[in-house]
Image (tube, rainbow, N blue to C red):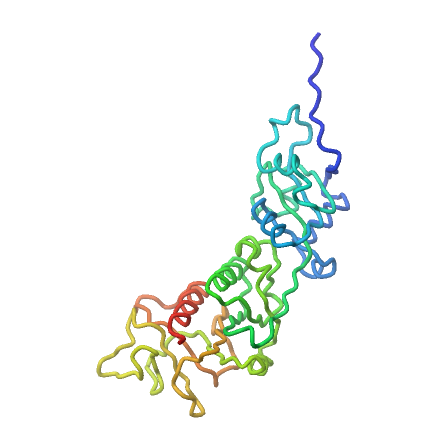
Length: 315
């Protein structure tokens, strides 16, 4: 009678976590689900070999490295990339702790939205230092107001960093840069973006301390105001109606004798709130002309357009 094939022996470095009630599994689940717990523990989760490598190459130490693999494979061939590569080369990641989980537990830890595969790799890393640089090292800021959707938040930060808006402020603790969905959407950019959390009531004073001029992204007024101004064409002239699609950004609300110009040290304020940022009605507004059939744009689209336009126009 033929003997049963021997099971594959996982590297002893990796401890198998078998169920969600395990202390380690509960810890990892809480890291994903609860912002307060992340800050209490001082760590967060990242998903995917690319992100793990990115953090490692940036000098970030790995607290825990987790590999998804079936519990009783009969050969190494049953374990696929990237899980197999990590298990074969654990020293390349220099993690403090190493764990194995099956795909069901991986999905419980990372959440169904993460769609982890059967050979997934994820890790626990320390919360980053997000302190803002000194004022003389910052020439523009992106301010995020009520951008609470993780996908929007992650994409805005990723775009901002790509366009040179590498620091700024958030106005509400609900904007969670270290939520796993935000980190995934930003491709880890949210872990490198420098910011300060500033309540709306303190925002003007904060921006003044950095010598920044607030530019509030808004919809162009339905009836053009006398101070509607373009960096490209100058003051609005209703006789030739230059504020059309493709004419670039327009600014208005130049109250208190503010000079009509594009600030050289702008703080672009982007809000996902239904009525936009409240409490800064005395600040300069900026918007893009849109076709009549379009009522509004997603905050990510608006932010991307305006950051690029302001970059192009600042001398």
